[in-house]
Length: 103
Image (tube, rainbow, N blue to C red; front, side, top):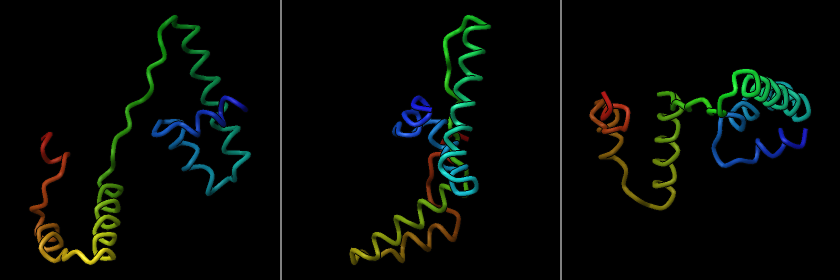
């Protein structure tokens, strides 16, 4: 359980996101047990296959990205910055994002 607790404190990792997604539905202790189970399964596969551990890639979903953009716009409004131009570009779908740049 100590390893699971430490893994949930990492800055931005797969196990931390897993913990955060479970803690709201199951509670802290059950979420920690689930993260501990993920670690045990990963260790088993590392030993069995004799390969280094490779953490799964984290993909930013469009829903999370839009939520982050809205939060930043709200922060700018609280600071007194005019955001009308940015909001208009976002509604038009002409706002540049990293995902659009990759395509």
